Image (tube, rainbow, N blue to C red; front, side):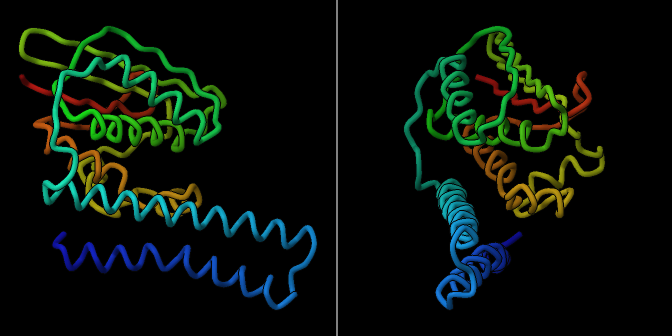
Length: 221
């Protein structure tokens, strides 16, 4: 997808929440919606505004990574420390209960902020695209000599094998209705791919032993 197509798709993605915000605001302003119903509408406006704000932030990060203008500094990072901070933030943002098991330990030479964004998207996808009443995520850190293997397994709804490469494309959604319902914009894994390339990592998706997917990040030092 070239820059013109990205701009076109970005405008399309922004148009949806903007239209919702305008529509609800007009109903409130005209006095058609009052009292508790107005409060409900206000909540929906806030939700759409938050969705729009996040999309703008994600596109800023995405284009910045592509142009090499953001997060240039790299250092050795304790992976467990980043995982714990991301888990805490995701719990706060999504307000969903999930169980995480961290196996192994290790360090990675990368930009801390980009690495956090990468891990955050993986966790959010594992939780959002999961219909289980007992959401499980296993993080396996395997560091050996000059190779690091970081694996995230979940018990979510999974991804069809023929779709696994496509999910790293901008604005791609395997299940469009499901994704839109949950507020997804199809940029999460595209950002993960850009971060992986910027940090000399390889990211791929395979089957999870728990029935969902396994996201594998590999880095050679």
